[in-house]
Length: 114
Image 1 (cartoon, rainbow, N blue to C red):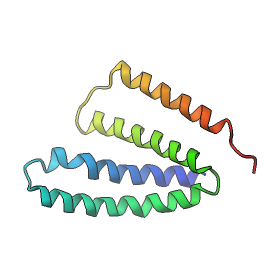
Image 2: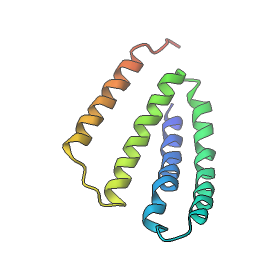
Image 3: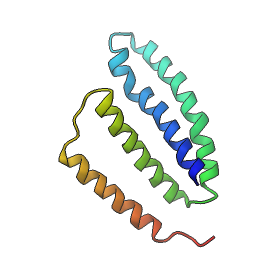
């Protein structure tokens, strides 16, 4: 289970950069260049995401796996936006995070016994 979380975090670091990093680093480059660069970065995201899902599916339902991935995605994005773009989180970030924690609580209430 820990390996799944680790792989999801790594994959989300790559994907967050592929989707948003180019806005700061390559904002003046031609769009085709940025698309190709993002595909290269996304390749590495898939190299971590696919094994994470295969390993995680042994422990989580598909719904649980997806929700865990979404919480990690938004956590990584929040850190990325804060430290890479200098966006200051507001109180609404906290409320949104609390909603995600509630979603995790409810999706894991029905966890099957192994």
